[in-house]
Image 1 (tube, each protein chain N blue to C red):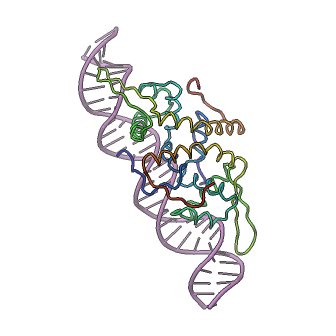
Image 2: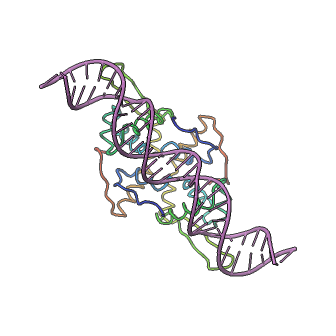
Image 3: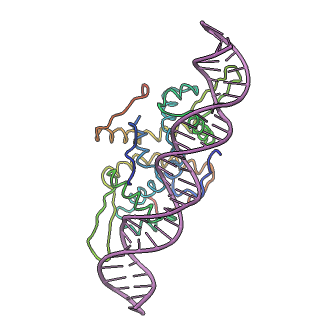
Length: 121
Length: 121
DNA sequence: TGCGGTACTTACCTTTTCGTGAGGAGGGCG
DNA sequence: CGCCCTCCTCACGAAAAGGTAAGTACCGCA
């Protein structure tokens, strides 16, 4: 069960965009892929503290189905899979940047901690 | 139970911002309030096709707690409650605009229908 | 031989979210 | 006297999302 294709029609663009990024880790995956360009499964897993393998694969598959990430499988042993952003994923990340700025400002205003995962762009 | 204040720390700004807009109707509420400035409960309800009263009040309360919307209660009979965006809510909407554009482009690219709720800004 | 690393899948369970339907207080309307 | 209007609140469940743990298949390393 990948994901129900959404019952009704979208009401506006925000609606459609949020549908694609909502998910506990999707924003972070986008972020990480944007910061590093290409990442392997285990690298992403290490980058997202607390994510389970199941959730990560599930989110990656959904994002692949949504055309946000590209999945390159190398038929090797041991297996090797590389994930990267598609053009749509990259443009989504661009569109997401003001939102990220807003969120960071908000965190500062509230004196909340931010746990940096890796160097940020 | 308003909402659990989020267990762990946020990892980046996108994380924090998404936490505040994720919810089936929050994006639409923001949109509607941005388009009209001030709306009453029943007006919002009519504007969001399919929303239940419970969900609408719940989302409005959460957004109020998050400092996104202002809630003005008039001690009248019949009751009258007006909702409007706070400065934080307005700036969030600004930050959300590129995302909305992205979503609309995406919808066009996929030939999906968009059901307009009201005149858009 | 046994363990760790690769990238998953599967089954099962808990938590969160969403929806449905009821009720309620104080009026106006017929 | 009911019934509808306002804006909610509460109780009950279904559905979705997320978490846990195990299994798969192959290899390198000690």
